[in-house]
Length: 454
Image (tube, rainbow, N blue to C red; front, side):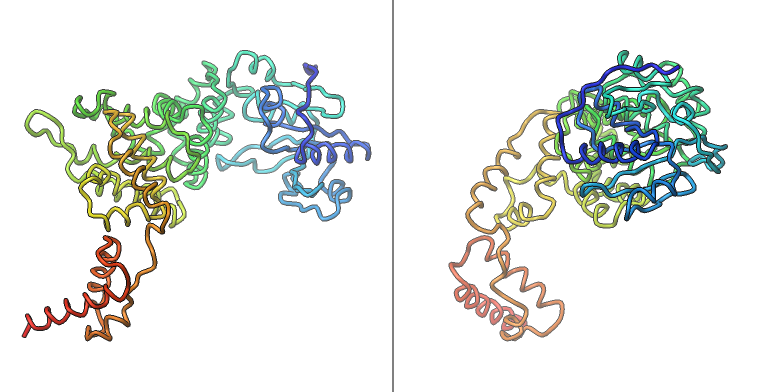
């Protein structure tokens, strides 16, 4: 028999109202219908659900009949997407799974009842049903007790659950660190025992699961440490495992080795941008391969560009979009230039601050400093420079075009680009009050160069 407990629903909201209407419509037609999984868990924890899934004994054809414009997205698995009150909801028929043959999904399903459906799910805290009409939670798998104990535990045999869908190995870490729960001892032991299976999970699924972990975990660094301790990290990011034990000069990094430095940075992460999270994770990935013991301390010459190349390989392996790969690799490859900002020419500074990734780069620099020596002089300098430039475009439209330069006698070709950069640098430096003065200077400079060439 299931365990039930009363529940107080969150205040009305559009997404919840549509989910309630979906349940009411199914029940009015004579079917069982509940909210399922994560939304029930989150309501019990006092967290606003991000989405609402509905589980029912109505088979897909009946669901399609009840909801005009519904779409069967996985009819053979009993899944239909229904539009209600301006939102879309997944309605899934209670089911029993056949054997999993590819480590991802069952070979087939048969439609069943609520208890059978609950007992096929991954973790007990995700196997709860919420009856929003009668304001109660229905528990067939012990999820209520595990919520009270703040434990992540698989439904049934943990090794069997992980062999069915190998992504669950990573999901265990995400749920534990997002909810600030502990892993049940048997579940943790099974993760360690099956950790090698994670290498067979598709790159896209690994990418998405890790990204969610960095962004949703209470402390993303604790999630990284858990992945290491459970032997999962070497199967997905062996380059990060190489950071473990890589010593750094204590005067710059009193927090410890490269891995510990990265953990501290990730724990302090507050900006919910996946590019920043991955840049933090990989910003020092070039240190282990460049480490050299010189004059009594480790040095990491060119670790930033080496890290950028490694980052690009990692992100391409994980099938990141090209634009994200370019941004993250750029941030990794250029993070050390912030050490020299007070020595930069004004034109160089403006290019730095005007880059599309600059807000993320600046936050990466702040996290880097705060997690090591604690000095924020360069951060404060750049923050002041940004405020100084607030009244004008950091990177204004160039006054001088290639046509202007060709009109001054520069032949079409690479030399035009050289002179355009020189002209734009002079404009950014504030050397001239307007376009006319800059153009007159260029004319003199070009004549001098041509005379020198004979």
